[in-house]
Length: 71
Image 1 (tube, rainbow, N blue to C red):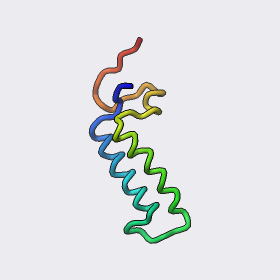
Image 2 (cartoon, rainbow, N blue to C red):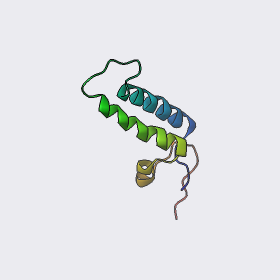
Image 3 (cartoon, rainbow, N blue to C red):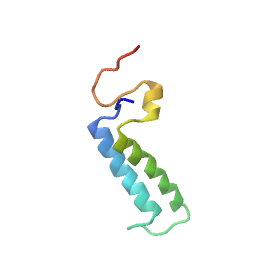
């Protein structure tokens, strides 16, 4: 499994994921009825830490600037 997420993409995923999780907990946000949706933020955090996005792999996309090698 090769990385397909670049530095900027990883940074944005970490920031957005952290904000969503903070909304779910809620930390700094008022409790609302739909705060549980914020737990979706775990997915971008995991993909940012691993450096691989399964959807990008399926669509044969990359944001890390490396050329894709096709078999």
